[in-house]
Image (tube, rainbow, N blue to C red; front, side, top):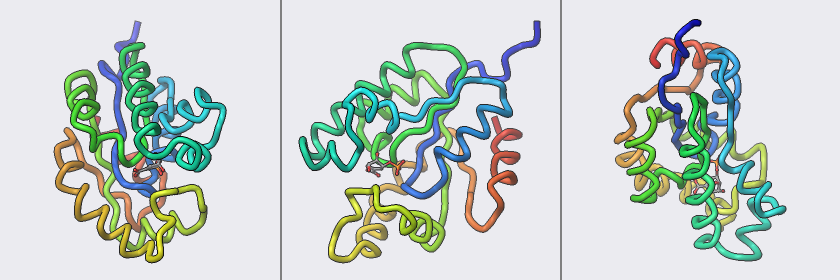
Length: 172
Ligand code: S3P
């Protein structure tokens, strides 16, 4: 039998709009492994959308759900690609778990790319502020040093999605 290409789960981290879900899905297909999206799993478990969860229970409860879902997805084992929400890797315990049990990959993009992508959908409660650009810049400043702890980094801006999938495929 052929060796599975991925010995451990591949966990995609990075800011909203970096392409974690779309790249993750294509990458999993190419690698012949399962794909899971932590945000989608949280929504399934809660029976509500992410904005509804933030609205009804607040960010802290969302983070607790996120933590549980990611732990379950990683511990359920098997090679797979897992896309996480942009805040997941910021939690010390979740980051430690990801670092210990999987290969982590930061999908890195510049401000313009991220802002353009997140502007297309209004499903990011963290950006519902008076100045979403300033908020996104602030998130980049706070989070990039932490995302940099991932095992691998691939830049996604200004290249077609298939090209990024290709780059990641050869990096893992
Ligand atoms: C968040 C990112 C979102 C989602 C939630 C919070 C964050 O996921 O988990 O809105 O803290 O950056 P995406 O990165 O998939 O948009």
